[in-house]
Image 1 (cartoon, rainbow, N blue to C red):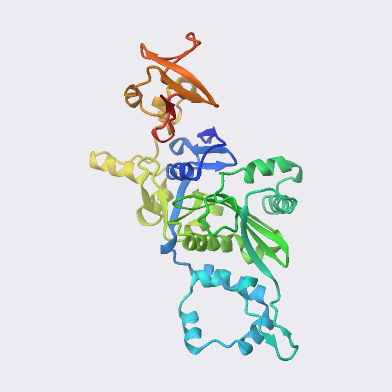
Image 2 (cartoon, rainbow, N blue to C red; image 1 turned 135 degrees about the vertical axis):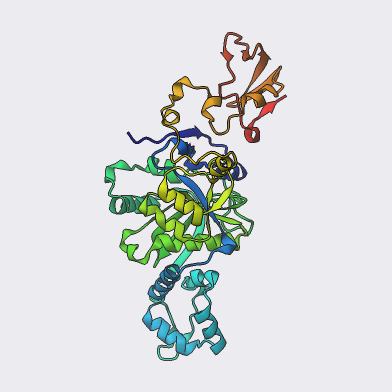
Length: 401
């Protein structure tokens, strides 16, 4: 039977800098629920991927998608008249023909950037066929966003309309990480969870849910009006988000998880150069050559593991031992299970927990260590073994002396 193992935790107090660390350890979020798959013990491993925004080289089909959309927005009549009223220099034409400038291209058809000279024939401003506007705003819920989301889920993912209520939508895509600055119009560098909204002639046609972290732009979800599916809005939004990373001095663009065996995920690999997070060493390997070849051969791949085995003179295992796959979680210590975020037993033993205070849901609890266990007072009968969630990760432990 094909199964998938994962770890889950929930928090309403994760800050952008915390989530940055988590993402680079293989975690993702859905609302306030944070999860990380146990890749070796899952039928379809989810690999974290990212690309360096400044190194992105758009392919021909990606460039064509942007150009097709711009032509649709501007319209043939505007393009013809603008070429006459606002002619480009020979050098500019040559530069545009030979070089694709991502930042220029993704903003070209935005209404605020469209040149609108007075047409001598009509004595009016020359207007494009459509008014296209993009803005970034807080991840708040609205009726327009909810209606668009339901339309997308039912038409694209074939889900029943009764599956989604406003509270579910809010929990899923409107309950993210605290933002800064609070004002979306501020020139200050943005962090936290945001919605990048696309409007055509005043109508909301797409929403990209984004987490802006110190190190990069993380794509959470994109939903759009299926009536515009032919314009490849998913591809357009990805390039727009890479542009956002460049403009906001975010180094990386994270496209979420990559499942090599899922055809619908393969498009992510087309945004290059793409890198995959090694699930054991947490280093980054290019999604090409050796890694791609091994992903074609087996579902779980850790290049650091393969290199370690090779250095020890051991053959690479095509899959993990079946005995490891059949582990019963309920009978195992968290240390043996290698749960992410849990200190090793040796690390826990180095902590000075005598008479420490533990902050739990706003209350300080007095702890005493002794006889290999942790005791919480004033209820000395409640004894916690080191397997408990008292084994915090170093980065997020909050022991108050």
